[in-house]
Image (tube, helix red, strand yellow):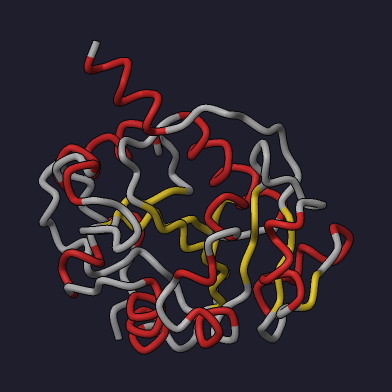
Length: 214
């Protein structure tokens, strides 16, 4: 079993430093925050922090995707650059930035989740995502299987508020858990979703890339 002592975890800046062995303890509640992080920014930190606190998670794993089937390759920064940007933002003992998808060569979220659950069967997982990504769920590979595999926590973004009809597909195909029950959300049987409260921000990775290019 790939459980490790968190106190002995190597946090070197080298991206290939046994990050395939995630710092997860048995019986823990873990948030999986997947994304391109193209690059990572303060909004990502806010999402992870609020999810950690509201859902009473033990840790949030930032899963930096090696690629993104929904984005053009030329729009993606180099993996190493995206990974390091996530490490620079995710400064907390409660966060861990991982190159799990690159190590295991998983391309789709459904593949990543399935592999992690196979390796860590005694852990309760929650998938964390922004409402803008939730609005695109129909474009995800095996999306129906995906929402039936793991509880999904959604953080609202401008133009994709909870009431938005852009979220109708995922809302109509999963039970919504209210705020009063979020502490036990990780052990809810899928398909279930919940909305994480917190301030919204319209900052985006694309805006940051444009500023850097100026």
